Image (cartoon, rainbow, N blue to C red; front, side, top):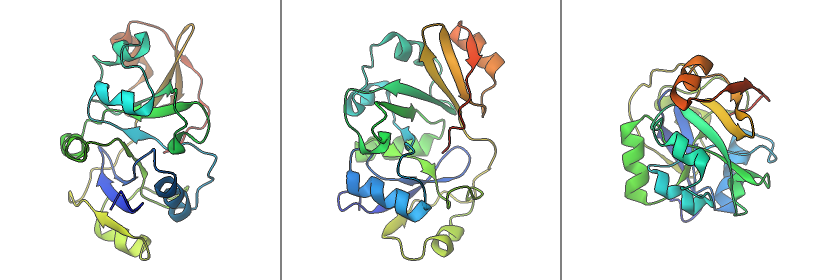
Length: 198
């Protein structure tokens, strides 16, 4: 399915997401099309281990990644520089990535041996989908498969941060508070929200 640029609908910590190989331009284009989303907006990516960052052009031994190793898996997305031109990064030179707290999703990524996009399975700006049966109704013409994990709990999206020279920038408030992040990272987390989206 992924090889032919089809779509997987996957469970995440809060709601269903749309998964393709983030390095596959046709698959990424399909995500933008079915979400009716601006193609200039990067797509978030999920991985199962720190070591899979290499497939995204991110150095897993960098100081920023070493700091994250003790936080992941968690509902925490981090924008990191990449040395590759990835379809999901929309030519920004960076990739938004997390190791999800959803155990079965990590197992799926490990089984596929691929990173996956994990943008929310909805039309751009609409409410997240919690029930797998809603996906067929919302995306009736999509060439895809649903990884059914039943009704998901909903809740906030992942918190999004990025490293900076002064510490970390908070781009989106979500499942981890700024105070908790500062405790875990041992560094300041400055408010730098930019309307980041799933």
